[in-house]
Image 1 (spheres, one colour):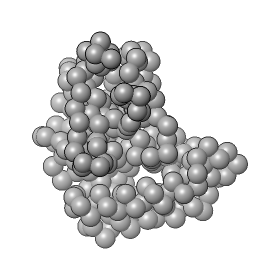
Image 2 (tube, rainbow, N blue to C red):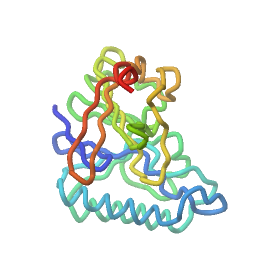
Image 3 (cartoon, rainbow, N blue to C red):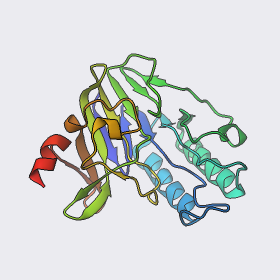
Image 4 (cartoon, rainbow, N blue to C red):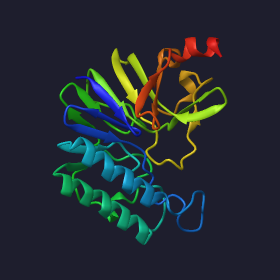
Length: 226
């Protein structure tokens, strides 16, 4: 099943996947990021579901940021995500991540540790999946890549990366997350156990201005070109 890219999301068949929204980061006492990040994500999320009209949307973990009490703005943003899917006729499902400790307080919809769509399994990627699949779609590491001094979010696509199966790692959907620069990273530097050979990961950058994807050689080869 072929996949296409759009604004940090992945679309395959009638399934749209986003990861690492970290709704609520920057609220409360630790203002790591501006509070307006929720409205930005909501607008972009609405645009995605209106544009692609998926049958289902899967959030591949870390819908929420970690906190002890859920700020009201977080409830509002999650409700907005749910409403966007309802309006578009899409089912919304969450595969919880390691930051989703308070998920039950704002989300009573469907959740699955690992969600299968045909030959693909979607999960957060912080733990080794139990299900066998031809392809795993994950988040967790928030990959970015530096090209000619410009750091940009990227997807990482690895064939035969985990137990002989392909892995696609999504960037954080939250544009205000700094992310992790992967240029010089080795497999052991990634937090996700699904990355076993970083040299064979191919970065893909979504160019918003041209609304197109830019594909680059695998990291092992890419490093030698820089």
